[in-house]
View 1 (cartoon, one colour):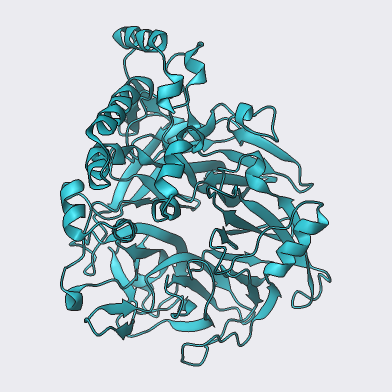
View 2 (view 1 turned 90 degrees about the vertical axis):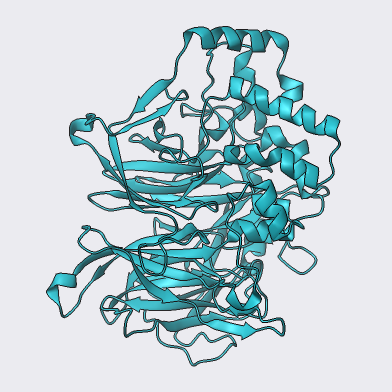
Length: 575
């Protein structure tokens, strides 16, 4: 914690440095244009603050009878008021949220009948010739006695284009329900979908899917669409088909190739303690957090967050058919990594393929901690351990730390890349300042490939610091405690010059990263870049913005990496 690691000599050095060192203009040779703002809105124009995250995103080539409408469309799946829901679970009312967050957090209509929690899907023609349009809005699952309308889909956390064995291309979108009695589903949007006439069909449905009752993991492996549920089950198919209507599990045309016992067996075979299965008593383990296909294997991650009694840390497994000619037959699974790759605060992991490696970006299970009785105090007691890291693993299961802190890791003695944990880049390159890592990047949130380069985005919690005093007062901290914590926040401005807003970094060699933006494209309320999708022409970035609605940005590299005057994102934390 800051109190333990900042001393007077460091502060004097930093103050002197600020007299002579000005902010650095980071110019990585990229332009960024905003193509969607304020949560879009059902009319594609007006905006809707409750559409808080670009939660899933991908590009689908569309084929219409009208040639003018043909072309690539960018699809986005969103949730509704996710952070507002977390705050409610922490015990805050709408009035509390309005007061503490000074009107910056979107709050739902107080009338149950007018409250709209239905997830939505939007699309945008990538050449800019057609603006945003609403593709689909979830139906209502039930209406309570109090008049609350509970949606079938609270949002859409994963999507993937797939061409089936009949040569039909469609976008497959996975739902989140968060309520155990509502099934999680995969819906199909074909390449000639007309929102004014068509409704997506359900091609997979699982009841009581475990954990958050949400599908996060979707991938294509060797001609099969793969879906992972948070109860540990994995299903594959080469021909998704419509399921009968209803609320029960329906998997016609799908083959189950894994369940959680496969991961338990694989972890025991590796000589370690088996990973604890998710259950009503154990709600800290989330299987199938993300998929990636690599070297003919399907890789999956299992998130496990810390409690006071039990350490956490992500696990990674990989699987493939025993008989490569029979993908629907038995699969073999093996453990690739456990226990957060040497740090239990690497509680979750995202995985992406780039060149000859699987890249792994780490996260803490931040919302889960906030909603647990001892979660906030646990985070506070471990505040110097919460920064994200990046690793990579090759086809032989050889691991390397790319971004991280070897001194705090039990597995790695060195790192290859040019940043400490949290993409920390100290203002002063000499001791004792080197010992202070004050990064506020808690997630390596997403990665994408564009123009032969790997991009990595972050979740930066800094914007929340302006609301800390109000939250502490709500939770009845003493005035002395509040003043002490406010003092630490003031000191943070001296030691961390990375502004509020999610970061975006790029690497060509897979090791050394450079910043593209360090301030959410100039908007502190874009506290994270939630999704990245690369095409041959552009990198699309969808933000997480629970304050004023998600944004969508189009990032392009300037010719020869030069600067045309619009690609300079200001920060003092560049290389």
